[in-house]
Length: 209
Image (tube, rainbow, N blue to C red; front, side, top):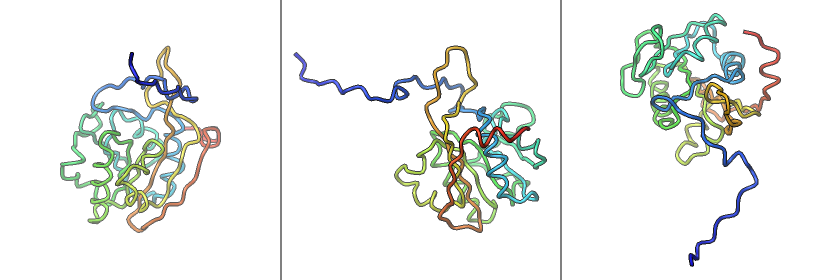
């Protein structure tokens, strides 16, 4: 008889829900309206209107469109662009496009390469190419070993007090599992970040695109 004792089942049923289906190379589009609103009405209010936004992992443009609707200049690129108006560019290994000099880089990066994206973005900021960088991550991404110093350099952190959907909803989908945060680094700010927690109602209800 086996002497392995099964672990007791946890109390949080969300831990046992299946992960949402993924398409393509670690593709988690920013479809949740609350996360879009946080980008437009919280993150970008800290960025001068004269500064262009470089959406460097633009995918299908789920962040590009609401930012452009607010009158911001957006340069959209992706290693695997999802539509014709998004340029093909390798953020991690390619030379940044000339028009992105002085921009704030902003995206929902692939989770599997988050560390590499942070290192690359901060390097471009430290050399003076970028004016800043804003990343959407799962809540707790800043507590992973090795990332603490990078996140402590940030100027602002906005945390979602709801669990957003990371994929377009389909019939039979389970409830979402992961909360999220937007982090903004600015070239003229060395940290530590100011942090604000936001509910879905207060960020979405007053806003109309």
